[in-house]
Length: 372
Image (tube, rainbow, N blue to C red; front, side, top):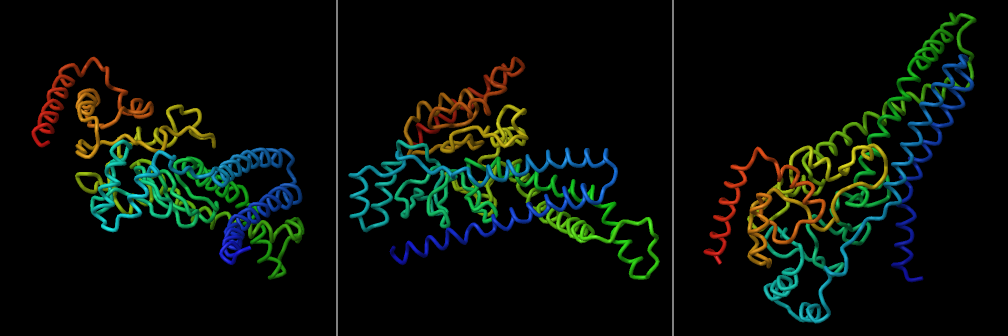
């Protein structure tokens, strides 16, 4: 085995340490709650049954969403974004950056790529040797390009992107619910054990108090750990809820996507309701379940921008689509885009507005022809 391969294997093994740590904490919390609290401490049978049923519901949904975020492999770009063999040879032989960009522009003409680098160049990954689709980024940890990459999370040992972003958000939500449920139900026994410890220290403990067993240490630490994790996850969950409402990724929140007309941090914002639908899907019955229901294909995304890309084809089709949905889309909309952007297309109350919209888009089309 080569030294580089040995190092890579060691890195892969070490990357599972955070996941193992989380699972050990969750496993201990399960034992402490079920055995030490419900079985050994709580004497009321009805209370035991209710606590255990609700606890196992939260535990199951929490672990389901967590492992879905772990095992869902990040999706990379398809082969159509790789340079054809002839173009690749020309690209490798070309030494001038300007010449390389001309090659990339010729290839990107037939691809649904509308974002650029900060300097306005075609986004190309030298490591994966492909043209990056919109919102796609290279993950150095996974060593691959990931569609709609958000970030690489060590706690799930996976890259959070288009394929598992919904699972990651649900994992944060259910981990909060799991922690707050434990904290709320353990609180009264935490107070009793805490008071018991103080009274016994002062030798004023009544005989009918809770027994002095190892359960008190599990209950005390269980409350502290659950409360600590709830506070830490709350800020992260709130931040990702904000990202979902704005239809941004963590990368886009720090560095706005660049379009032909410049950077725009709200370029993919469609409104709060449609933004949420794009991540969680259009069927609300699946929103709270770790079942894949996100809209789109990960390559093309509806955008609110009205811009023209002179380097993309189908300009006539672009004008037609503008007359329909009020924005310029140089390629036919996908099913999810039509669903997101066309909900109010046939509203009877907007006859006059639709006529004005068509006239406005016709003006945009005329301007495009004049500029070309």
